[in-house]
Length: 389
Image (cartoon, rainbow, N blue to C red; front, side, top):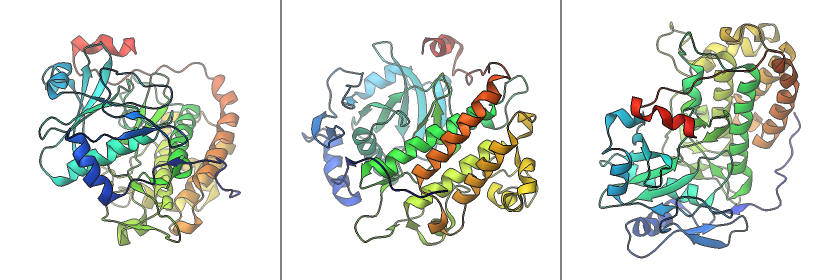
């Protein structure tokens, strides 16, 4: 695969952010003491502040995140009812809610204990306020009442890629080959934006199937930017940091040394590609020893072209082009190179996947339309909300 530099003549400037200075300045901003974040357009000029008043929609030039009260969000989630809980993570819980305007949203409530949760909040608000792309989740607002830290996102009605890929019900239609490529391309474009348009580049650091959310048309968006880091600048080759992320997705050099680079994200993307091809989880403790780690299990297959077909998700029932599969597995194997410098750049990956998708489109169209149901609604009363979006 050819290697070429990012083609965009201009990067989105997030140079004013670093872990120490941003934590100090932003902490005072989110506590409501007068300072605000500056939203920036593609040229890096200020277009507004995060403390927008009463607007839930986003301007054409960028997000103006609204400041919500805790009471606003308690009402939206029916006092954070368990029936509205749609996800849980290491730093908090995510609820489905309806704002006063009727807009359906996802509300992430960070755990009150632990400094890491507050740091994650600061990073995520900064990242989502400065960076805008169709394949990044859209931040609508935030809440900083007292010690409460909440984020309000657009609601993604089809849930995460994880839900559609693993342990699916027998009556549920599996993702087709072309749909899997479509999701891979969208995720790659989001990552390309972070790596190639942001200045300095942004290392996502937590790319995994549960962080790839889908809209009604199964268009993917990267979510959960709490672990994101600014990439190396100048003569620096890496960023040294405490190892974070999810076991099974972390690049080996990062897991061993804490040295983080853009190529660390490429490895994680390779794991997601492998999940899309195989229908297997990155780590699955229900498998027998030797098969629990997806990358370890796949190594013998990735090294032998004759065994590529044995990697494929059985649920596809042979509905894929073997030629496309061979190219997809080759891209995956390159992403999973143990030596980081051998992994491709994300823009090369986007070009390769877009070509594969164009080849797969015609064969998949002959198989008829795909019918995929959304994930279970948090409650019966909210069942109509999915159809509204």
